[in-house]
Image 1 (cartoon, protein in one colour):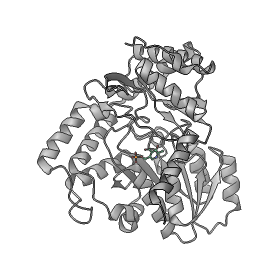
Image 2 (cartoon, helix red, strand yellow):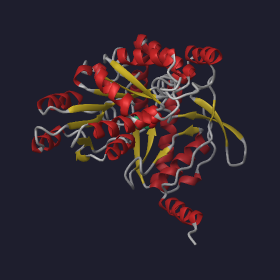
Image 3 (cartoon, helix red, strand yellow):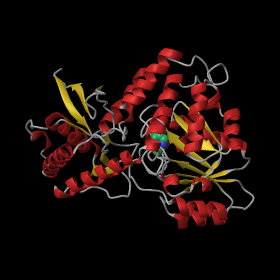
Image 4 (cartoon, protein in one colour):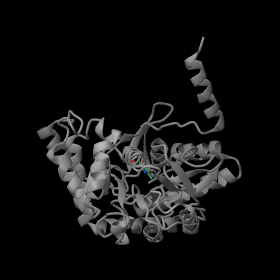
Length: 413
Ligand code: PLP
């Protein structure tokens, strides 16, 4: 007899053995005290810690006006939309949000999805099916949702070395001119924090007549004078055919989207299974996301504070001789390598220092390249940054001596 549970358990056991099994912390999120939150330790004691791994960069999930909008519209329109977009699930709030997004990205239209993962999966798989014999040319560090979208299209995919436009051009040169070509890349890469060479890719796309698809998930709300991402910062929205973004990170709510020409958006709307066959976002969520975009678009000084905090944090880390990976974005990672050691370091930081950094392991990064990914928000203060840096120094010292569990309880601000 086929023992389904046993086979799955063996796979889980092997994953645990490899150190890549994922343990989630049950965060009792506090809107009032963010980035601080409550949790229960193994002994069932209530503890408070500082969140250093949230993607709620601008703290919009706890913004009073955004929460107020969510409350107000949910009382008016209900908790859910009650239908797919085709069957009563297109409300005035969905349309308003799509209009706001198209304006943000200076595109003719935008299309909403349950999340940016679904947006990438649906848009890429649908495009690949609509263009006969299309080929995707994909950056090697692309996110899982982009990879799954290209795979689901059934089209050929060629990978170019990360951010290597010479390699990209070599690939484009070798492809027949008449073949549809779609270049897929990100603006801010979510783990390495590197920034894509947007301008060079736009030029190559023009030269070789390619469609361009950019994932701006870790950039929207954070870069550009209006929060429109790296393409907005560079004034290159016109050179990119499809811009993908999330409403969940910089904008602090939930949902994903693409912004593009009317015909591209209408094609995905009409043929994209992941758009058609799913209940639409709740109206109140759409209204809250619109509010968040409007606020962030008009408040460049909030973005200035965010970028100032990144510099401040990195200076504190330097003062404590912490080795972190440098890049031009807001993502700061410390490579640990071994998955088990990385988890031990994260456990120690939480248990003994009240600091929450989720260890990042395979398949998010390559095997043996586990890291601690630090994200600073607009609400982290200088004392918290100094404390993080000092604590990391102590933990790294013990890690280097192979002595992690030795730490004692620390006082923290
Ligand atoms: N693209 C990238 C680069 C991401 O890091 C993520 C992570 O969540 C996504 C897409 C998916 O976004 P969402 O959380 O809105 O589904």
